[in-house]
Length: 140
Image (cartoon, rainbow, N blue to C red):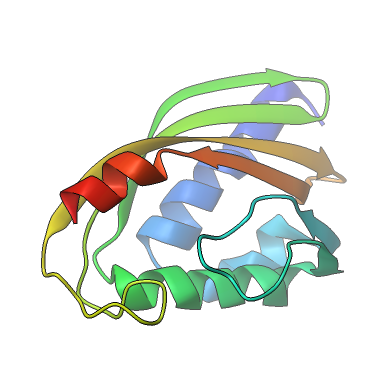
């Protein structure tokens, strides 16, 4: 795929999957064999390889339970070959149990992350993320 086609997949990852909260689009965007390299804060399992669409839907359920109004904005996209890097700003309100155990604060956060993706056959096959969790936690 071309760099523009790969970038379009990542824009759909933000707009259609996360912002529109469309779990069905996971089947279109995420490869069946998918590797998650990003560690979720306070997760009880390590990231790794698995059934991509189901893994991503589980991540969506976990994050959107905490921040049901989560909104992501692509700030920058850079691509080379099968790799796309995105700088993303996330905004949301903590209305669900934070990381599964802290009571909701009702406070808003705004923080940036970088997401790296490797695409294969037009789908996301691997994902890495570097988040500014400290800024997020201080706001909450």
